[in-house]
Image: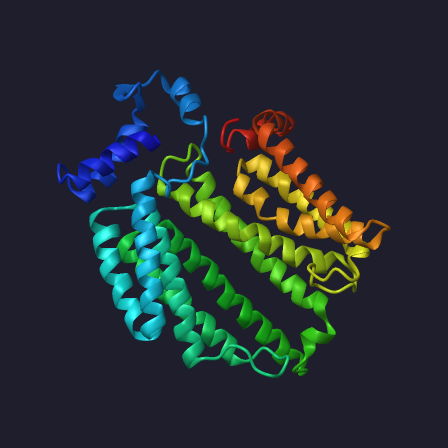
Length: 364
């Protein structure tokens, strides 16, 4: 499917077909089992065989299509970096728009589209912090935080409406949920009458954050399950949403289950009591990632797992060198085991699920 997309993109670049026609042809051809075999386009086998072939690697990033995209992306990053040093607030946005018109809307280059979306996100952060500084000396959630976050879904949503970059829609959804989170926190704080309510009650902060993380995960599943064979941009949107949902679930679950131990899982001092919670939460996220066939969902929790294991060894009698290297060995072994045994492990998990659920998930 990736090869077929590349062929259509090349046809668009050579002006053989219009970008709109290329976008419509891809789902039309894939739905009818057309695939690239041996360097040519051929009709695939019947539906079951085509499904099995298409499922050989369903999480291949569609924003990595060749070194041409990488070269253009390097140019984009260097150019925007130079403009950022001169006049970030005034020069970067026009450059992003011009480059997006040429590279995204006309040439439909995927990796440059991702880099330009990230650049727009950074520029929006600079713009909103200039007019609405989000952080105040107090520990309360003020209107500045909401005003700061509110600009992201507007600008990123407008960028998606124009250029149809999946990452921009995913960031727009995540930032919209961040706006809802700040409003909920301000409402709870206002109802309590205590400006430092969440300092005194961190479990409430974790609970509200956990609810928003669940909503984000549900939206990622909505896009994922609506494209079970992952042939459309819905799966790309789900990829980015899962990449944000996993750490959101982790960083809200750990303080919720730590029972007064605090919420910062990167503080190593009292890690011995929080490490089992972190390890159990990451294990649960890995199981969820296996069920929904999302390696990105699993990867997001590995950093925190490494920090947890690091804290356990540091609390013990291990020397500085030994606990650092032991942490690397343990985390590396987990990554290798999951990576090499992903498909057999997933088939075992799918067989344990009821058929009504398994049939709605991506095939194993």
